[in-house]
Length: 147
Image 1 (cartoon, rainbow, N blue to C red):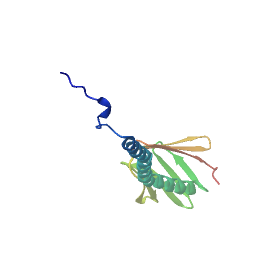
Image 2 (cartoon, helix red, strand yellow; image 1 turned 60 degrees about the vertical axis):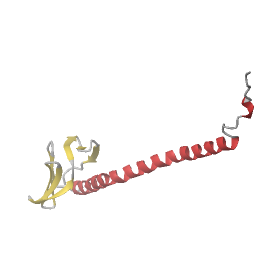
Image 3 (cartoon, rainbow, N blue to C red; image 1 turned 180 degrees about the vertical axis):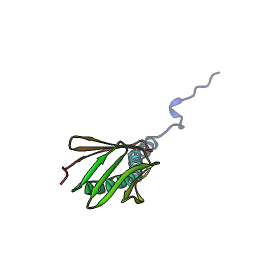
Image 4 (cartoon, rainbow, N blue to C red; image 1 turned 180 degrees about the horizontal axis):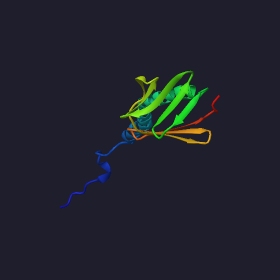
């Protein structure tokens, strides 16, 4: 003779409370995922700050030296500024951009550069720098006439 099993009396499934707890845990984990991505983005921004800081300092220094210059010569990868009886030369040297005053010594103003290009169009100096990291920075300076 066959025995009948009552399927409704089987107590091996999930209860409603267990299913609700699983949903709460999953929603907490899913809520934390955007915070993790925001943390990684913040870390990435802080790493890039050093290169941006160096770039901004260079732009401020170059802008100040272009102001009230006596003579300005622009070449493909170098720029010569004569100001107050001082000759200032910015030139590419390996993977750095160096600054020389009166042809003495050198000061590194930008590091880890791939290429640098100076160009002039009328009264505007264009500067394009490709860094080894793949980032590209551009700047424009209005050149005042010689005194």
